[in-house]
Image (cartoon, rainbow, N blue to C red; front, side):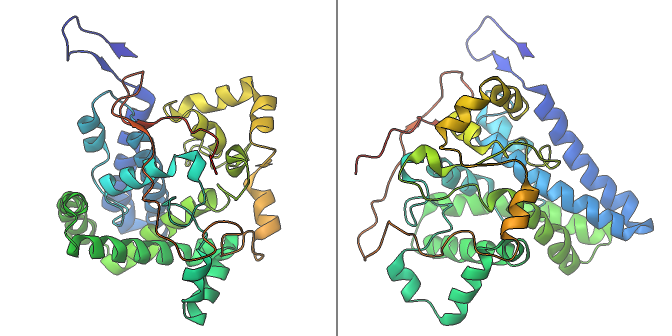
Length: 336
């Protein structure tokens, strides 16, 4: 699993299951486009949809410091953006902020919160309020969630670039370089119309990930009660075991293939720690919330009145204790 050298800089721990999965993901995407698409287009679109979703999960795994100890190598391994929308460095920056558990679900401090501040929600057009409410059902999140999240993210980033944010500009330049490979390959190499690729694999790849993210977090007075555990799922491999999301939040540097054993070893303790926010599987969530709103659009407690954002910066180690890359320091109970 690890190759060790005697000189500084020659140590290289490699998590081979993740490397093999990255190769399999991109290889399957290429086979689907080059081989399957000409003969069985529906099957090809289905395979590409799965690979887009899996690549998103792999990006999440990589930004947590896997599968090597070199952040640049890790980034290169998932740098081909077959999902088109999310620049790796932007996802990394936003997601590590999200891992500050004491600010989870805050509409301004948590970049992945689906709650709105009351005063922001009141300023929205009625049609947008309706869309956000629909988006808080599982069916809505699956169908329109990719559009809402992608458009909002892209518009926000380009506003930041116009305002002079160099880090965001660099992330998009690197992302654009990847798109210069992916888009011609899809159009000319696969012979797949770009509009179909966007409305098929890209859109529904995000929709598959939305099954996982739909109920990952809820408001609770206790930070540990804000993150879900879905005990079993046939989609576990696609999600890289992030259905055990509370376990991931408490152990963010543990590799995906070790999470199930870690959960089984301390199942009762994990469920007590997260205040019982758990479901046996995603079918239970579908039955309960396919067409019913799970959470209110407006945050039930935080940001009830206009106030300056806290510009919250989570405590981040440059390198974690295992040398596996950037990682947030475990959260402390909130002070307020």
